[in-house]
Image (cartoon, rainbow, N blue to C red; front, side, top):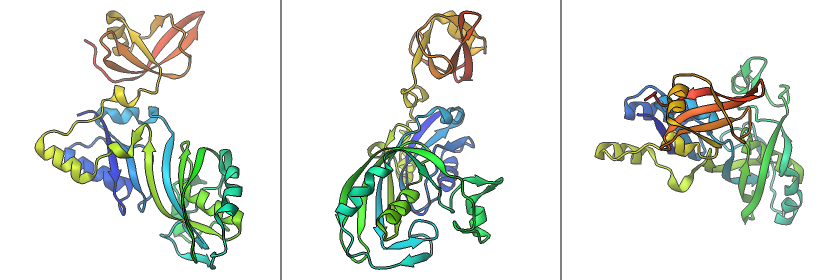
Amino acid sequence: MNGFLNLHKPSGWTSHDCVAKVRRLLKIKKVGHGGTLDPAAVGVLPLAVGRATRLLSYLPGDKAYRATIQFGRKTSTDDLEGSVLQEAAADRLQLTQIEAVIPQFIGAIQQVPPIYSAVQVQGKRLYDLARQGATAETTEIPVRTVTVHSLDVVSWQPGTYPELTLQIACGAGTYIRSIARDLGDQVGTGATLARLVRTQSSGFRLDQSLTLEAIEAQLAEGVLSLIAPGEALQTLPSLTLAADASRRWCLGQKIVTVTTLPIQQPLRILDSTGRFLGIGELNRVEQQLVLSPRRVFATAS
């Protein structure tokens, strides 16, 4: 059993909880996930099964979220799971004030991850430091450059603690909790993330995702089908090899070839029938293009 699952992660489960559950359901140890989701968040969690775990790093990194941000509160975790650090009615806040600062959060931006995150500082995870009493004010958290492709208003709910729902498309490594916190700082009320749904991740979409219950039911009926690696990696450029070259490449041999494809980038390698063989990379060696195996998935035939 080798391939990918598009899991709809439930609220209250960690990403590791989901991996452990699927391991038990499939009775297989090799299960991994692509892109951690916070326990309170729901939505797309890509899972790799069997030898497909070796391909997780080649999935596209872009993600999309539907995020609801509550203004007037700041918390220790930058979401409603944490303790309240600051609280004041924000009923005078207008949507137009927020829309005026939204452009500052689009493009390549500088972002400080939440103190409760998996980012490492001096060899320790930030969430471990936070559990030992560290705070965002007492810890030197490294600033990171992340990319936000778009940030669109979905709805606005006025009130004592008004809520804004946004649709966000971003690159890998972007913390939506940080966007919520920083947006609140920009308008002067403070803010925290109230709800988060990941609608897309690594090419997998929410409307095609399966709940844990659906996976269990399909297994019982014998109809569960994993997403083929070649399909999951379709965003990568592909290179097709003839029969003899396919056999040699699957044995780990380098292949001299002629192509206009980019060098030093991952390529999806296929045989003449379209079968996915693995991930390769082109390099120029003494005026020749040489295709080297990076992840051989298929067996030689």
